[in-house]
Length: 406
Ligand SMILES: Cc1cc2nc3c(=O)[nH]c(=O)nc-3n(C[C@H](O)[C@H](O)[C@H](O)COP(=O)(O)O)c2cc1C
Image: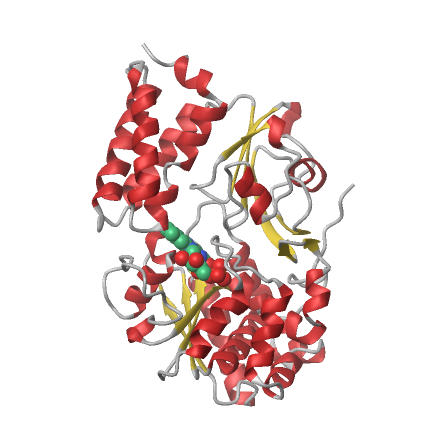
C-alpha cells in the first residue's frame, strides 16, 4: 500500500498558519540562508533540484529564474499564481490556508534571486477567505521585518479561467481585460508593466524554502528523476475517498485511485480518469499503471496539469461528460483569437448534437480535425488544450460516440 508523503502540507495536528508557529518550526531560515548565498549559486541550486512548475506547464523553475536574473532592467516582479480556476483543483487553496508563510518565503527567495523587491499574489476571486489569511500573513511578516525589503500585495481575480494563464493574469493585474499576450517575449523577460516578471504557481513557490534549506539533492531524491519531488493531487468523482493527497511523483495512477482513494465508490467498476483538470486527457483502465509524473503522463497523451484527479465509474456517460467540458471551454474562451473563439463554440455544438442523438458519421472526423487545428493554432494554452478531452475520448472510448450517432 503506497504511503502519503507530506513535504509541503503540514503534518497531521501541525499548525503552521501564524508567523510564530512557522518560525518555531524553522520557517524563514531558508530566506536568511538564501540571502547569505550569492544569487547565481542560489539559482543554480534551484535549477539543480530539477523543480518543475506545478501550475501545469512543468517548466524548470531555476531556469525560468535565470532568464529574469539575466535581464538588467529594473524593477522586476515576482507573481504567485493563485488563480486556481481549474475545476476539481483546490490544492493551492489548502496550501495558502495551511502554510501561507511558506509561500511568502518562497516569493521572497525568488525576489532576492532575480533582484525583485515587489511581489503580487494573484488569488482567485472565489477565495475571499483565503485572501484574508494571506493578508494576515503578509501583515505579520511585514511587521516582524522577516521579509526585509521585499514587499507583497494580494490582487484578486474576478472568476475568469483564462486569467490563470500567466500573460492574461499579468494583463489583469495591470487593470486590463484578462486576455493572453502574444509570446515571445515571455514574462521572465517582459512581463508586468513590461518588466522582467517571474510567474510561479503557489505549489512551486512553496517548495523553494524546503529546497534552499535541505538542498537540491534531497529534493531530487524524491519521486521521478525527470519531475522530482512530491505532488499535491485532489481526488474527486467516483472514488471512495475524495480528498487532497501529497505523493511522490513516481506513484502510478492506479495507486492514486486504489491505494490513496480506496477504489471506486459503491462497489462499481472503473471506467476512466481525467487528470489535470478540464483540459486533461481521459485515461482508460489499460493505462493506469503509468506514473503520474509530467513526462510519463505526456507520453500517454495525458497531462498532470494542476493535479486534479477526476475518477469516473462504469455508469458515467463519457460523451455527456465531454459535452459539459466543451460547454465550459466555450464559456471561458476569452475570444481574442479566432481558432479558440470559433473552435470552442463549434466543438460544443458538435458534441451537443452527438450527445443528443443528432450526430452523423462524419462528425467524429470533423471533431478530430477541428481539435487538431485548435491544438496547433490557438494563441494560448486554453484553446490549445481544450480539445484534449474530445480527442482522447475519441481515441479510447470511440464506441460510446458511435453508439450515439444516428
Ligand atoms: C487557461 C490556463 C489557465 C491556467 N491556470 C493556472 C492557474 O490557475 N494556476 C497556475 O499556477 N497556472 C495556471 N496556468 C499556467 C500558467 O500559465 C503558468 O504556466 C504557471 O503559472 C507558471 O508557473 P509554474 O512554472 O510554477 O507552473 C494556466 C494556463 C492556462 C493556459
